[in-house]
Image (cartoon, rainbow, N blue to C red; front, side, top):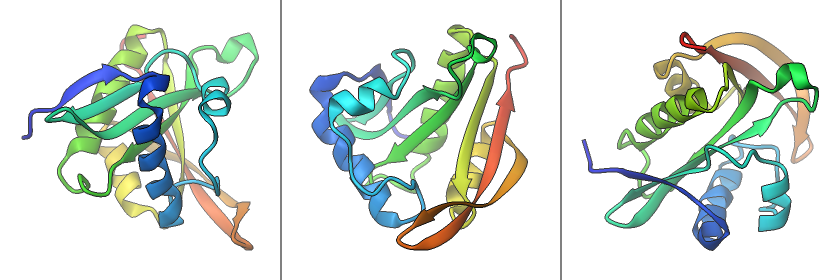
Length: 163
C-alpha cells in the first residue's frame, strides 16, 4: 500500500481539486455536472467538514467531500458523498483508503448516514462504495439527463454502527 497522507483541502487547493473533478466529468459516468464550478459555487454546495485530499509524495491524488441532502434539521446527520481520483492514480486503492477516511471523519462529526447516487454504468464506484460498507438502497430510473440521454442511478447508503 502506498504512503497516503490525508489532509483537509481549502480554496488554495482548488486548481488541482477542480482538475480532478474535470477528469471525472469527462468520463461521462461520475456526475451530471457538465462544467467545473467556481470555488465559491462549489464551497456553498458542500459541508465545511470532511473535505479531504489524499496526497502521495505531496501530490493530490484524489479528494472527497460531503454535501447536505436536505436543509431540514432532522437530516443534519445525513450527507451525500463525492469522491474523485486523479486518472493517473486510479486502480491503486487510493479511493478505498480515502473513502474509509471519509467515513471515519464523518462519524467523528456526527454524520450517521452517508449516501451516494452513482450512475448505473459506474461499476468501479459501486464496488468501491460496497467495499466501504455501503449497500444498494435503491434504483432511480431516468433521474437526470446527460448529453441528451436519460441516466439511471444506484442509490447507495451506509449507516454508522457507532452513532
